[in-house]
Image (cartoon, rainbow, N blue to C red; front, side, top):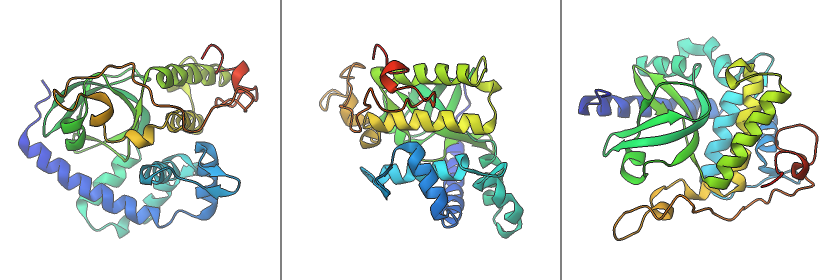
Length: 268
């Protein structure tokens, strides 16, 4: 259906290596004030100290810094286009162009092709089913799992930009509620009507929710979702304990300036 072939997997590996090189180079230019702004948005900056539960959270932070922290009207990826000539590798230039069109959402895995990737649906934006090239997901995830992440398309290869955060029943319900509330606050009928900066606010809220439910500890999909003997799903009802508790009296994640318990946290 998707024409996924072994040669495309090899091409994916080449582009993934190029993406890793570009991101490593860009990450070196992230300034302290950008880290702090992103850390505050994602709930990682606590009492003036950046606190990570694991290495995956640092990857999530860097990804947000690259795409969602703006200076003027440009994020760090867009500002790097001024220095595109410094990227002498053709694949790296291709990746830079793709990075400018990347978008963050919550995706549902609808099918797997071992050793290649997964078919996915976008849960927040209306779009056609896509084939995501990701060998790790293809070998360890299960169908119907939802994850938050950013995807890009380079040379007709769709891939993620970094760590993906699983969503479960409660965290998914909260994320959908928060997204709907933020669209109303921004006077938009859907996410497609939001400005780029408004979409960055939504992305921060989605990531905050995932981290609050300990998603970064479950980046390796298999163990929580499958029986170790049969590899059959344990059930979608599995939900980790909230690591960073969402207190009812805290400011709501959606930015409404109401208490969480009186806004998006009602009936949780």
